[in-house]
Each structure stands twice: as C-alpha cells, then as structure tokens.
Image (tube, rainbow, N blue to C red; front, side):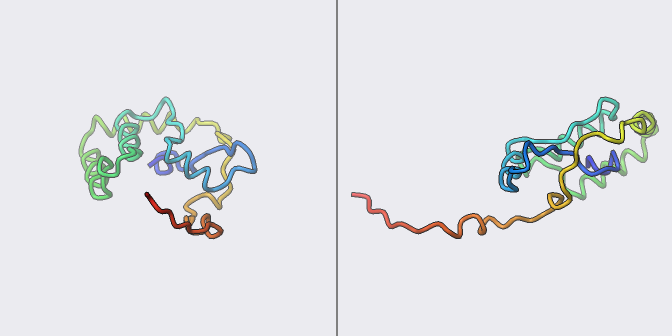
Length: 126
C-alpha cells in the first residue's frame, strides 16, 4: 500500500551493516513500519494501517482492498481528497531515507537455515 501511494520502494535504514536479515524480520514483526507522510489522505492512511495490523484476520483481503478502491472511485469527495493529497505528496523530497539493499525487498528467508547447527537433546522429566 505504501509503495502504491508513494510510487517508491519502502525506505528503511539498517542500523548497521552487521544487522542480519533475521533481525530485520524480527523488527518488522515487532512493529517496524515505514513513515506515513503528513499530507497523505486520511482514508488512505487508515487503509495502510489496517493492512499493517499484526493480526492477520484483521487485515483486509485483496478483494476487500479492491472493493474499497472501487468505492473511492464512486465518491467525488474521496477522489477530491486523494487528488489533493497526491498533489502535495509530489513535493516529497526524493531522498527520503537510505534504502535497504534490494535484496531485502521481498526476499524469502527460510528459517531452516538458521537452525542447521542445532543439536536435538533428549530430556527426561522425573
């Protein structure tokens, strides 16, 4: 949703070059989200936040998002607000943030890779 609105890759800064992909994933799970700019139309900002909900059942489905967009297309008031927002957002500084390396965009990381060296221990409970 963020990329659709701003037409740019989601900006995140790595705290250090040593930060691992796993650490980044954990930060996203803990609530790391891109900034929603001040001039973003409220209806769109609210939809973005719904999509970010930590509870998957609370997030809108792709069909629901399409239905919402269709409703917006039929509302002159909402279209006006979106157009006004879009005009203001055109002035966003091109250098918003340092972008994460493209490897982090949509990179699937198998959790199995992190546990290969682990050993299985048998425990007995008395």
